[in-house]
Image: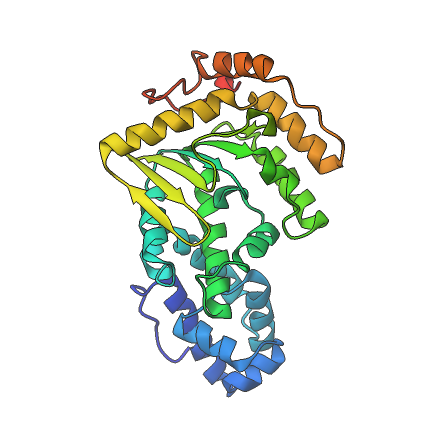
Length: 321
């Protein structure tokens, strides 16, 4: 190689610099290399400048084959994705300020609690479902921004399976299960993913059935995170706007609303059965409100679980409801 690449660069910049050195060493223009791997030359330019969407593993393998580099770029690609999560300030520049502020806080959290009224939370989305939800948004302006947001969303999920992951408690409105986002196949894959991910000891999912009726969080999503120093923050979000809530009184008020939703939701075992029924296209029976309410309240107060607000214990495998 003609010269050494500065290792202090971000991984995306390192990837781009290596790609440019390899391309020029082979005497190829960006347009010629793009033709060899079936992408526009502007995509090659974006990769070399570390702008736009991050490189995919499939594209990295194609570039390695075209350049004869024996897997160099494919080996580097996972680190670029991982850095999207570890160094979010580099890649979240295209996100709205209100969204970016929450993502930065959530990335530090040791506990995350979420109520989702319309779509599955980003932390639990499949790639296909994420694309279907993000492409209908109105806060991105270019295809590159859309791809970057999809990849950043998927990269954020890595922390859920990393060492010492945050505890995640999610309450899904039944509407999330019933609306076929992306079409039947995408939705079936999303529901299957929910069933699979709930096997992790740090993740709990409940479903709030239609029978519960009106509640104070209708119309959007409501989330909380607990930072390592014990600070609690809330976040409310609608279709095109969101708000990070830091005032202690407001956070407590939203927290009470969330606890009511969690207590009224189906226990996790019944929630998983409802998810499975929706995935299989069955007409799911939802337990009568008094029955599931009593079971949910018992579940939340179990000694090994999170309990109601104020508990700081992590959710362990032996404590799953």
